[in-house]
Each structure stands twice: as structure tokens, then as C-alpha cells.
Image 1 (cartoon, helix red, strand yellow):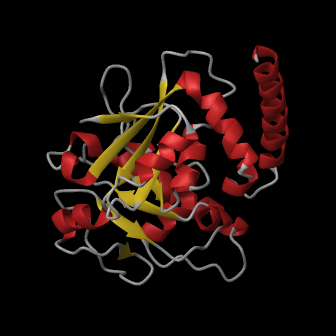
Image 2 (cartoon, one colour):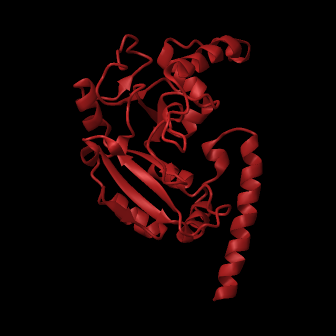
Image 3 (spheres, rainbow, N blue to C red):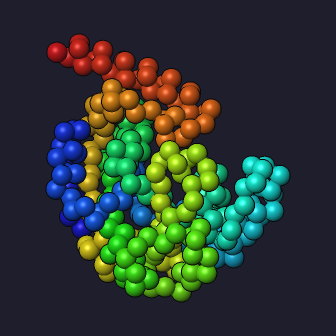
Length: 254
């Protein structure tokens, strides 16, 4: 698959203007790893980290043990809604997050700008055409709303399925999130035979990530905007310090 390489915020914005509107979803990754959900990833020996039965057990255990912590009146209607909820609290599921916001995707891609020192690595932003993927998988072009369509059968489809749901937690709302559901035997999105029709890939070399993160910070982007919870405050404090120090280095270099 062809890669579009960008080195600055301006180049990223320029690329956005060239990407067709149907590629309306994106996903930022600070590491260029396979487009697979956590539950379906492989170890160094190319074996699945978790069996199908284990993945199912994770979700069942979460259902049993999370009830006491669920907000009052919070009702999850089906297995897919439970997956969405569990996903955002660290349970390995068959879901991969995407967002409608390409600036949020860039922020995720830059997340390790000040902590990763290997300049040979690269961050990536993937762009996805959900209509085309669902046309292949479900013979429908719309994103499947799992909060309304309770009886969708997606496990036996040939391709992954793009889904959405009622925004029942702050993270999904803040990240403008949607998901791709992967069948247990699915391969990574970029390895599908239709990959060139549904995906576009933007690469950012690590040597450029600090400058781009600085620009995102100056535009008002914060980790607490992506993760609206108390633990993000400390990440923003460290980010502020990192940006200030980087700007000092820039002044010295001039």
C-alpha cells in the first residue's frame, strides 16, 4: 500500500484536502502496527495472543464483575454494546477504535512524541472508507448502529464491519468514536484483498513528531480532551513542560 509521508502540520492539512470525503474515519497510532483489535493480535511467534474462548470469557467476566460500578440507569442492550463499554476500560475485545475527527487522530499519533527517542520509527494516521467496507461486509453502505439494530449477525461475515452506538461514556463522546468489529478469524484491515479500496495511510517520521505535537498544543489540544478523566491531568502537566522545553531548544537553535 502506498504511504503518504508528511513532516509538518501544514503538510498534514494539505493531505486532508486531497483525501476523498468518503474516507471520513481515521485512526492515529504512535507505532506503525497492524490494524487489528487487541483481542486478535499476535505474539512474536505469530500466534494469537488469545483464543476465541478466552476472548469470550473476558467479556463474560467483565459483565459479571462490572455491574456494581455501572452508572445508575445504564443499560447495555446487547453483546456489541458490552464490547464497546469493556473496550474503553482495557478489556481485550474484537473492536478497533476510529474517529470522525482527523485532528484527534493526529493527536493520538503524536502521543509518544516526547517519550520515544528512536528517530527511525514512524507514527501513522489511517483513513478508512466505512461505506465501502460495509458494502463489502454487510451489503449496506451505512454504519451499523448497534444500539438500534439488535439482531445484526456480524461474526459470519467475510469482512469486518463498521459500527456505532449510543455514546454512553465520556471517552466515546470526547473522541467522536466509532468502531470496526472484527470476526474472530479476521485479518488486519491492511491485509484484506480490498485494502486499497478502503484505506489510505499517512506516515509521520518520529523526527517530526515533537514539532507537530507542539503545534497541536498551541492549537489547544490536550490529553484531557481525549481522555476526560482525572489521570489525564498529569499527562497534560507533563506535556506542557515538554512543549515549553522544546520551544526553548528551538529558540536556542535559531
